Length: 96
Image 1 (cartoon, rainbow, N blue to C red):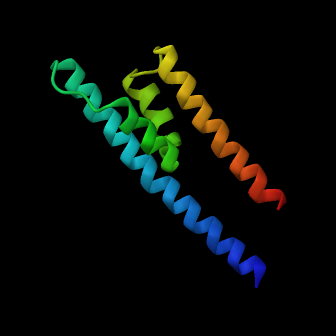
Image 2: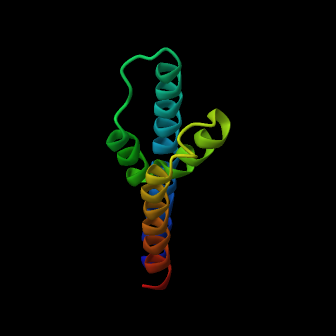
């Protein structure tokens, strides 16, 4: 029973990562477009929130594809802290 639960939990987590990665990628794209047009931007807290909720892989990809936010040191410190938090969570989950 535990193995079935763990498999379901893993599948749900990966689904959330995929969904939130698509959301984060889209938010970066929108923010990059708005930056180019000097329009209202998506707040960094919103971008980080999408990363924290599991979208950090999509955010990482968007940073590379759109060359957006990846050079802003203060932003990247928070981004990598979020990635480390997720890594710690997965490490805990794997050894519990």
